[in-house]
Image (cartoon, rainbow, N blue to C red; front, side, top):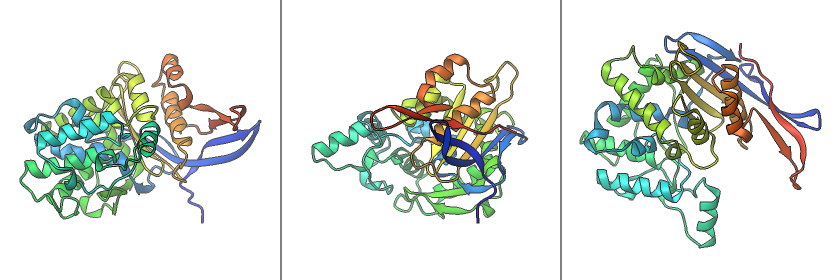
Length: 347
């Protein structure tokens, strides 16, 4: 049975004729929890994947762990990242480990080659195998271990859902998204950490509160501002070269936070006044139904959402270039044979 929560959001043409289509759901919410705009069913429940990473870092920041270990903004961004595994990312993880007193063998995220194609190619050409530092979630896991060490909690079991680190993260996520922590569906992410499923508009609310935490308790509000500032001021740490998260935050110069997750998930947060003077903070959550395995729909849809919200200037749209909302479809001779384009209107 097809999932009727989804609506068409992106299509590819060959010539002028549509050839294939991606479906999705979008929720846009303000910091008061009001649904501002949507596509499809904003109450659809799905896993957040790495889009949850800013929330997973919050309890460590709120407890003051980053100050205790002397984390820089770059290192705070890194614990919220799905980094590309470049040499700069590896060095940053290693430096964080030295500050905290961690060893690479403590990380239980697994190992994969860098997302950064040139870095992966060089490693393979030299016969090198990847290390845990190259894993895109190594920053997040380092942050979890730092939290456990800061609180003098067990390190070996830091990924168990019953562990105090994961319980603090669950409660933080639920609080930010107005959910009952006892009713949040929990799964195991690709990196072996617990992950949460939630209605899209609830996750969008959490992102809106990251951008405007004024109504939250002081310690939580300060943590939200710290995470937002670190991610938007150090976007190269959050993702990497030619990736949407990094490029969009560079172009918007601190007004927009974005964090992609696996299987077509993505979250964004817009600061108050990001669209125009007096405009409210907004949170956005979106999901592409098929997981967007070639990453061709998500980028264009994200850019188009911001365009329809009037959150991007013409200059910023030009700077984003091939990210969207329209992209060329090329054949093997690099000849333009069609177009990838968004096909939705925010309601």
